[in-house]
Length: 435
Image (cartoon, rainbow, N blue to C red; front, side, top):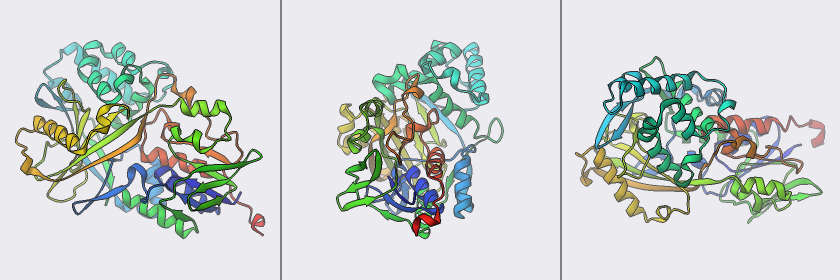
């Protein structure tokens, strides 16, 4: 194989295009958006380049470290000690370490002990297969009891998954706990990282490397169809024409796959169509006043319809003003997903005022609302059996999106790993083939 088309310029597509071009393939990277980066893409926020959807790096994100070293930008990685908070009953509590758990006044000593053991085992656990067919709700109740689930986890699940809340994979939740739990330098020292300048620094480095390797990047080119002849992929069709290919790596969300590849067998289309997603909205504020000293606040309050607040400038410093994300996760069929930006901004700011009553609207410097229809796959118990193989029955065609690295949550490190693996599976082209 020598001609490769990669669909999608998110982290996975960029990593695949980089690895394929470095291995000697002729690469075209095709992206529907006018800008690269996908969920790691940036926008100009009142003079600051910032992600539409927040990102952070953990100590276990080894694929990110290796790629940055390879690209010559390892010196752009920064680490910072961060903290977590928990908002409940109009009060903000410290959270996320054993001392905070011991001091938390709203649960008894037995519940604290059970929760502490649960967290310890999650961080130390390496195997997830025993959790694969159990719901997160049943798993947490089994370990911690119903009162812990109801106070800490039930509101988060309901505000993120809505009608899917009681049927989320325990294995998927476990990986999230473990990733954060292992990003520590000591029991009380949480360490999270970021790339200097934001995720766009990594995106731009990948683009430059792809182009230096002879690859071509085509933005604003939505793929209309992946073309196939005699059971082998032949390329992709876009509004500007056809890109011929010996191999195609598709990283678009799985709900779009069936329409893109009409030649797929019906049973394969059914598997892609059976994977459901929820949308994500990030309401972003630039404020002249800090909300709290914490990077992340989990919110558990019946009157607040969001799972948390991320004060991003408690991780990445961007100047005197504070950047705060208020994320909304929900099925796109939920009426709130279609709310005007003004309604979302108003509701989100009321939440911030609940956490910090000193905030006033005079503290708002700038705002932004970012939306994505396919923001998060719904990973129910037994989800691993739903995921089709990356290599499709069509020769030369590989398809994967963020759900394909389950039980790991979506993130740049796993996208880099899987994108690189798909490119590596193409092998190295034989120079004689080009003659």
